Image 1: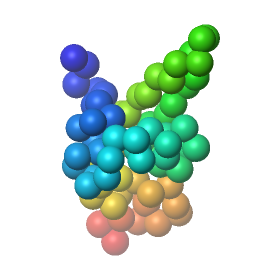
Image 2 (image 1 turned 45 degrees about the horizontal axis):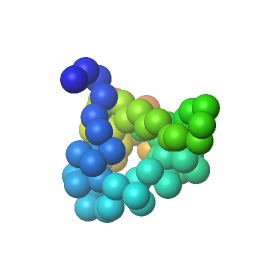
Image 3 (image 1 turned 180 degrees about the horizontal axis):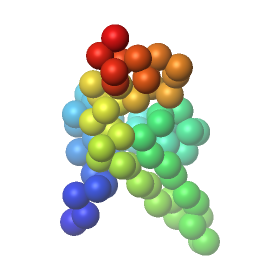
Length: 74
């Protein structure tokens, strides 16, 4: 398994949500650490970047202008 990605199940467990909740959030683009793609035939494929997920869980990768200040220690 590639260390740069984590499974939906692992991420959901760490977030305290169900895997289906996280899949829907990925499909709708509601979380900044991953994406979902509908493959031919209708099946969905999910990708969660482990580093961005960890940063998001720590409150450091929220996608806002304050991210740079948090990273700089301000």
